Amino acid sequence: MRLRLRLDGRKPRRWHVRLAERAAALPGIVIEIDRRPGQGPESDDAALPAKAALLFRLEALLNRRPLDGLWSPVSLAAFAAFPPPSTTRPDIVIDLCGDVPVSTDVRIWRLAFDGHAGEAGLLGSLLAGRAPLATLAEDGRVIAAGRYGTEAGGVALTSFEDGLARTTTLILSALAGTGPRLDAVEIERAVAALPTGLGAAALGKRAGKLLARSIVRRLYHLCYRAPHWRVGWRRLDGPDLVDLRTHPESGWRDLPDDGHRFYADPFPIDHAGGTMLFVEEYPHATGKAILSAVAFGPDGPLGTPVPVLEEPYHLSYPFVFERDGTFWMIPESCANGTIDLYRSTAFPGGWIKEATLVSEVTASDTTLVEHGGRWWMFATVRDAAATVGEDQGIGSFSDALHLWSAADFRGPWVAHPANPVLVDIASARPAGHIVSRGGALIRPVQDCRKGYGEALALARIDRLDMGGYAQTVETTLRAGPRWKGSRLHTLNRSAAFEFIDGSARAPRFRRS
Image (cartoon, rainbow, N blue to C red):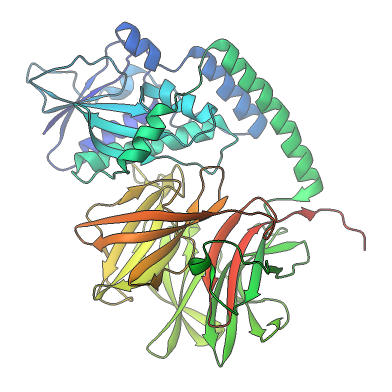
């Protein structure tokens, strides 16, 4: 396949080079770069305004972030390895700047964000406070679509670069013939929501708000430890949250912490006639989480969580299950670039690493389920590294769902041919055990459109096989009068108890 990338030669960027390098590495792809200056008003509208660079520099200064990421400008010499357009007609032209004319002889793929071409469309959506919906379309037919996310919603530069990283994911998936899709209704809604303007006045207003928020954020961090999560629990005397689809009238009780650490990601399991709860324990002093456990009696926790697993790197999301008379766990170990399986030799402790299931991947919140005679593994994955020696991934941790399958949970695991099967910050990232209700599989997911872990959604799995994946979000739950705070993050249950987690405040200075 002869592929031509059309970019605006006035403003080539590092992400263009990265995209070209990774596309050229695909089998059967011959790539060329049309690097002429953008032509016409369409290209001017799609281009990032010069004032955006001032905003990014201010953000980098206030947040102590580098300016040499995917956004950073490069010279045209960076494309020396790729030839300019030849006289041979390309099979596909990918229009990244909005000025490629309609053709009956060449397939043209047009990139848009909320219906607007180019980088200006992406930044405009972010500054309007939305999760940008990216579409790659040919003659009006959507080839691939995704709703992008970020863990840095208050920083336009990082959010923008997270979007550029996921754009690479989207384009490469489309070239492989497996581009992720979104519901047509979602696409129509996003296109109808026009981005805000990117003129000097709008960007200046944004800079003023940025400075004010930075001051408020620093004052908050002086007074409170952040982030700080808390675990909620209740005894099950009736339907659970999957059946209720709302918070119970009784509300939730907190698993107490001392303010110097928080507990999150609750995963209970039935044991010896009771419940053992596993949690992420995050001591603020170390900045690195371990996994801990506490037994529950009929009236609640019997003491405080005790450490059961620690590694040199951060651990969280202790996905624990029982099989073949043994307890197993797959904790999140994305900081190590692996998905690892542990076996307990002295429950609730004695965890030893049994196997590395997947390596060289930055995967979050790995979740297993048995379906159709196979095991299926769910996790969100950052965009892959482009070169040897680069970090394991870049971009958002939460918006791209990948699947693997295996005959046995110990592996070997095979990646789904359509990975990522979903790009959606509102429903990709797992949030607890998948459960069966009325013959359907219900998957708790995180809705991170308004920030990481802001809401919990329940998605019905409509298709799960090697041919594809589909789901429908049925319910979205948030914090409120019965679960105070600003976030709702995880959902799990045992036979006797149900658990959630969400945000909390931990003052740095407490009266004794």
